[in-house]
Length: 154
Image (cartoon, rainbow, N blue to C red; front, side, top):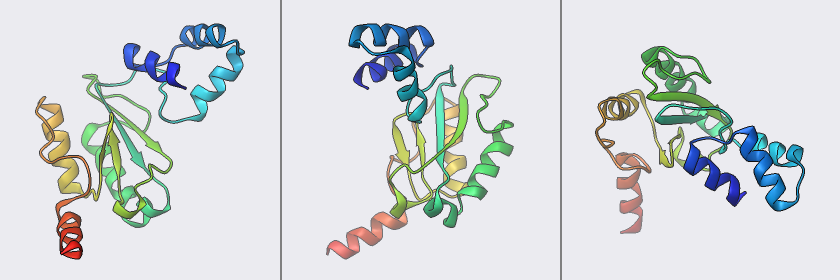
């Protein structure tokens, strides 16, 4: 798996040729390496946009409104799941659990998790990324949750 990460980090995605190279280096079959690549959603087997938007759609996120967030993103960007915007900036996919059930709904953008999403936060994030600016808020839980957690700690 570390070699798959390395290849993806350098090339942006894992090609069949890269899988074959990894298989030779590790003494595995290409089919085995391909099975690992396609099993885990963290590996990309095709080119994607500058920003890979991975929206969790499992139960916790669904109960907290990820379906509304997904439909909003699709309308706003003019793409369906698995597609990339014509300008090459955004690729949208849905994924299974990202492990942030307590801060649902959550979306991973490249390597960062954005939690407690609503339409307003999604729009602010997409606006900034589209313009090449940093995200308007740090990755992690939304401000309301941070205030609650700080209150609990005091």
